Image (cartoon, rainbow over all chains, first blue to last red; front, top):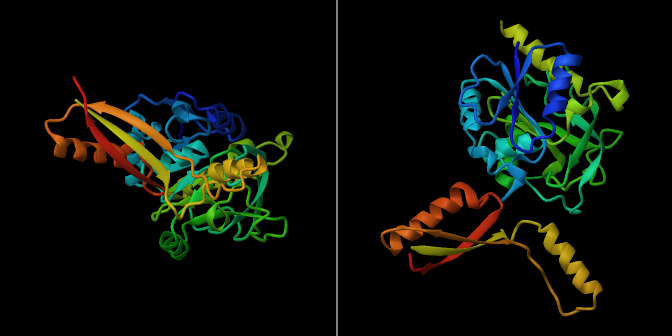
Length: 232
Length: 84
């Protein structure tokens, strides 16, 4: 299975994602420049963190209209696996592949630290190796990660099982203190209705080696590979 | 040519962290009379359109497709005819 890492001007998590897939997982991976119009030959696309196009106007707003994102949208509509991390998550909401939006953290600060995520849904290609309510230690690094959806959409997400990760404390409780950015209902990651597109603010690609403090992010990538192999 | 003067503000129902931070600082500075601060954006777009109705429709298109995140933001605009 071949991974593609989308690179926008201003991406910074692209090297981390590439490194994890190539050096830790040992899977084939290539960078895909934002001017590319085709993503043919790839099985899973990673939209990395960073500040695409300087995050001018809004995070992800300009990247959404880059040529490669049109190809990503088509790929997703055909069932292709897409994982958007942090700024990549913002691009996916701007592109309409995921519901809601992300804006300024309630404390207006850039938050850069480990968070505890509670796995809410294991019936996705990204979480099938995980247990429901399992806790993962995965870092965040953002100042615009405050996830918002209106009440009606939140109900729909709950009913459809589209909430994949929530910020929790060490006991698995989704407390206000465990919520680093003010996200509605402690939401850290959501998927689309068909569950082939996942967006998350925390950085699993930065939690793949013990030397970095956690290997919990690896389980997400291993789930993707297991899912893909099961389909072949 | 037309110039659209566009104001973008978070919807009233959306918490405004930047506005709250500015509000708290004004209070700390002694401005007890300040009730609320909301922080938004102001944009000017100059463009051509055959008439005012077409210009208004164009501004709405530009706003909803790119300039405004309608999930959390509202916008208002005024149109000024300018020499081309």
